[in-house]
Length: 327
Image (cartoon, rainbow, N blue to C red; front, side, top):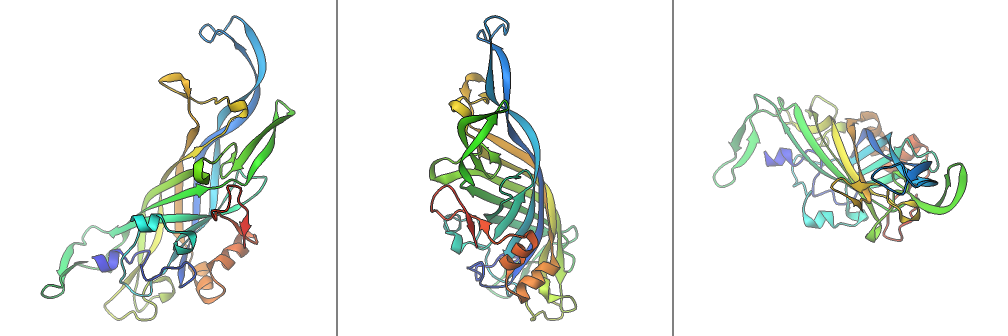
């Protein structure tokens, strides 16, 4: 089983993103997030009765907004059916950008100012299965391994992805409060106004899980979407992740005007909360056309730049918290 399961989306032999063939997936996500709303509020200095000692002022408040991400997930394509999947170990989590192998290229629909396409590192974990497919011992002597009773019948799959966001697009956005331009400046991050960074330029994280399907690639099907190159022999197969859909969550840090945080701990109204979640759904689907074009042309990033109509991607390079495009 190991030689097939861990060859599903990544091989250790592919150590550099641009070093070998890739698979490109269409990526979509819809979610809800908090949204800053600058508004004039009449309030009482007596917070319990809400009636006496009334006062009116402009405040930084939060509502909820719907948003979405669209773009592409790019993962390396293995040259054979073997290889260990090096995710979720300390070495890989601590790897520099140039050592990572999978990336998410996304634009947020709510970003009307920068319309930035972010390049985010992705950590993946996947499995494949199907009812009627068991696990058997394969090999001889001390070289026994577990393998599926039938590769051709493997249809189901699950996938988990994790990504972290670093940096902001701007550290000093001037905002309008109550129709008047304020002297306050706030950051503009991955999720827009007031999405800030903490120590180490860390902004937040997203995680998605879901179920879907795999495609079996044999000697009779296009090897451009498989993991075995042109060496697919009769009776043997490789597996390509086809599509996945599921739920996503995340958490991001926020700043506030005048350091007055309008989100409060539900058990302690005097304890402000400086982060907020996102919650929604996501999906990926293998784009055979773009994968083929990337593997036979100038590469994945050139193909994605053309599709998303950009010259470069916003990415964190450990050179400051305000990031820019990298061509």
